[in-house]
Image 1 (cartoon, rainbow, N blue to C red):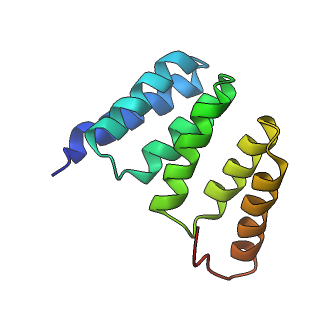
Image 2: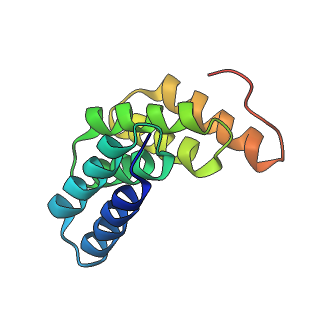
Length: 113
């Protein structure tokens, strides 16, 4: 069972570092939150977006995929994943992720990844 108190403290520390522009420290905190709870959507999503800001695009994509697997009907997760794919030059994958985001924005559901 995940230690949710430590997990939540780690992500909050990550948010604080992110707000201060300390991306490397934010990354470390977000990593810790996902290590404490492998099924922690918020941690994976925050880690993915931070890695994208750090230009660690391929790793960001892996974290973004994990986030969409955990919460396949999260609009922002699909939007972020689309941005990651664009940054990596994976246009077909970006269009697929964007399509899923569009479905969700119209009130639909994503049924398969």
